[in-house]
Length: 104
Image (cartoon, rainbow, N blue to C red; front, side):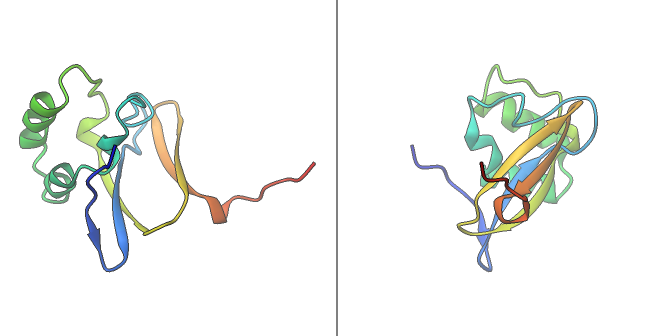
């Protein structure tokens, strides 16, 4: 499955919900495309959350939308390995090169 992504200046837009209460991707991991959906990114950047809710309802029926109104965009360098982590509903993005790994 090829996911559509919004790329600008060598960076890819990633959606996440940093507020406590409900995660976005971490509560919908069966739908990784919601991390990158270009239409959603544009609506979030414009602060058009009512339009965003309608779009999500039509395009992704049945997903959990608790973190929808807190979505933010983070621009990550293309090709960077990352993961979205969540604590108490608040998501953050970890980039592989920023994590101190241990070796056994």
